[in-house]
Length: 87
Image 1 (tube, rainbow, N blue to C red):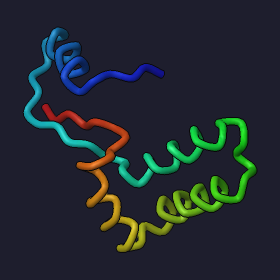
Image 2: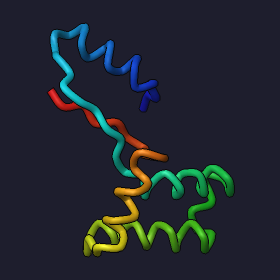
Image 3: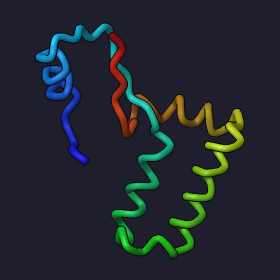
């Protein structure tokens, strides 16, 4: 896995002949999970806060309830984990 700044990634994509129309962030609900994992230690998946947050993410993925979709939309521009480019 590699981590890029949005501008650097955009330049890499455009160098390969693609035109970027727009971009936005996604997966804002996932960022706090990774902050939590880093705070307690990546190897400590068994700790209850990590397990509960993971359970929330699985529930969100499987059920797609309105509450987590709304929360994700609010979090995406603030703490989105991924950048999405549209060409």
